[in-house]
Length: 288
Image (cartoon, one colour):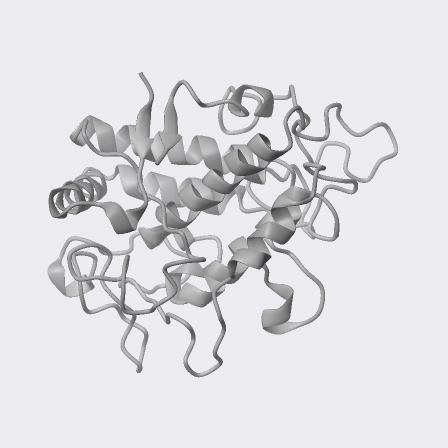
């Protein structure tokens, strides 16, 4: 029977307590840091050689869908009542409201070094030391809204702009494409600075700190953010019935993207699963 992922704003006090406790236990067991390692390993930009799966590629959405399922399974091994909540950043736009409360994720970082000092993931609590990182920082950092260089979260019209596009993705299937739902949602745009970050990417920048870069999984809000991105994929699928993951076939010989993107029926590393198999998860979970 499918379980339900809820809006974080609707969680009861007990549901928040159980979610936090399960996350902390997965961290204590050493499992959480493996998720950080995996995301760093598969964060391959356009400019690097080799297969791209997690970002700047069509598989951005199915890759993270499977990634979320793996973390959710780890949480449910601790407490079977726990599911991943999602953060609708088009509605919950304050740096002081949900999910940034002391009983859930804690708040922004202090001005001097962006170190988070409130909530269960604050370094002083002793339960959330960063062990896998691209820097030597050991404590969780955030800079919600970037007061020194302000940036706004995406609004509903930004999401609608992506949802309207009836094509899942378009060639050359990277960060440079200007049409297709995938990149409009992932958010690689043109220009310099904040104007080039759309939807998913803009949220990472708005949170700041640990959420910027390959080690973004170190901030638990990563999962709430990507659960909402996953929800938006389900909304796009419902709106464009019959539209499928693209490319359906691998790029041909001579194509610069050959061997760099995953086609619909090809295995999606690091799992033995294809994008085709991840398009319909209605028997596993649904969104409230």
